[in-house]
Image (cartoon, rainbow, N blue to C red; front, side, top):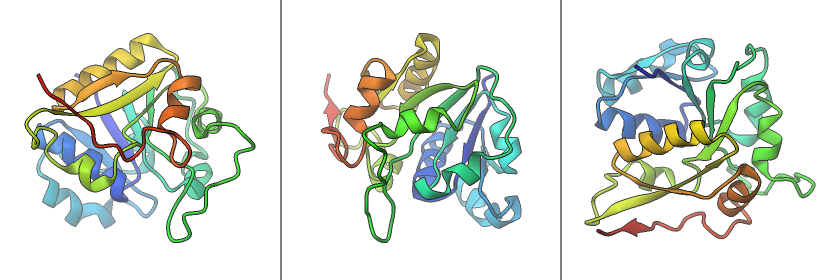
Length: 200
């Protein structure tokens, strides 16, 4: 059974945990303040979501990273080499309250992110919808809500694509990270905030 960890318990981290909990999929949720601070949240999400340390979440087979852009280096610091495990980059280079985009020198945020997770197979996904939409029922509009994903490792993408399908979304593979991450990056990409639905 594939294990799942989530680093970051803000709006997007909670939304991902909510989508997993809806299907009874087990995951370990972590934040920077320690698992005891998440007790109330995980209790509200249901029995499949447990609180753990950052290191515990990072040890899973698939790890979602959902941390404010400025706090990413600290959140990733000190973690061991990822040894080919899948890391899902859900991050955007912008954050409240100023919503000023980070200066990446023309690089994509995923290009910068990859350097923070040595040895990981990175898939960009779960970043182009608002937390409220992501946490909602993906079939509420009569079809399947679209989730985009991209990455350079075909097997890793296939695993995330299968998880997206299991969660009730319709996944669309945007290709490799250089192309796909630019399409979904917020701000700047053409796809963020578009709540698209695939009808049969």
